Image (tube, rainbow, N blue to C red):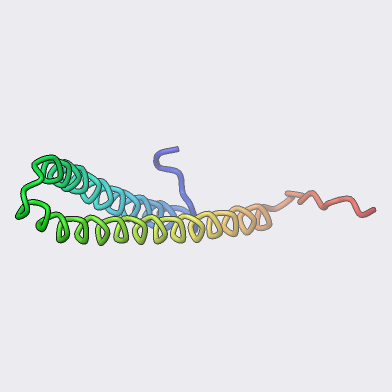
Length: 114
């Protein structure tokens, strides 16, 4: 799979493929970083809750807001990833069909009509 071209022809398609994969990787790294931060926030929220100290419980309000914002950011990253993946898959299938149609002597199979 690595090095496969998602769209285009020749090296241009390879460059586009690498660009898409780098974008995916960057988004996954960002999401993982936020999820790691959320783990730390949840641990601190739990410790504050168990302590039952008024100051710690008050601090949890801000920590929970931060956690909710982080969850929203991760959801947005995954939504963007999903849209990018769908766009790449669409471009890939369009590229495959145009390459197949451009090959001399290549017959495209047509669906049988009922």
